[in-house]
Image 1 (cartoon, rainbow, N blue to C red):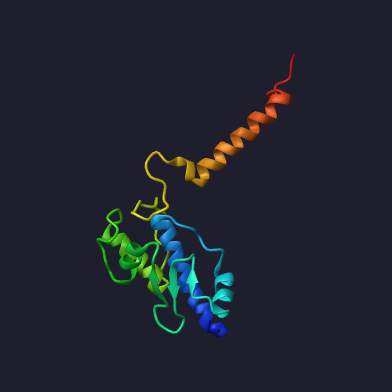
Image 2: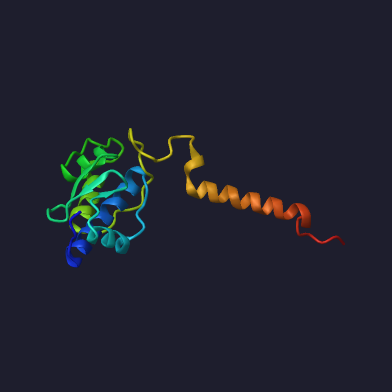
Length: 155
């Protein structure tokens, strides 16, 4: 592994973080633990992130490939507007500007499903974090009420 100087590691981490955020918001996937940790990993010589995103801090753009979400990689870096059919070319251009040039973050969107996407498909709400949290909190309230009653006082 080749160690990277602090400035180059920070710049590469910022770029990689924008790409991961865009990928997460567009097609699902995991979200990075943060720029500082990415920079530390890059400074230490790590070149593969999430087992699929290949980087080289000495080139621009520093992301060389994304084996897991190659369609998204093509859409962002190669200008493949048709690579992700669920995203309009204008919106994809906004995401491309965000990743490549640090532009403003485009509006929130529901991730589209691609062949390798981790976004929940129609009817698959079990993987949706908000749905899971809502379900879990309902279970806690239900179990809490059982031994203590529903909270209303007998008159």
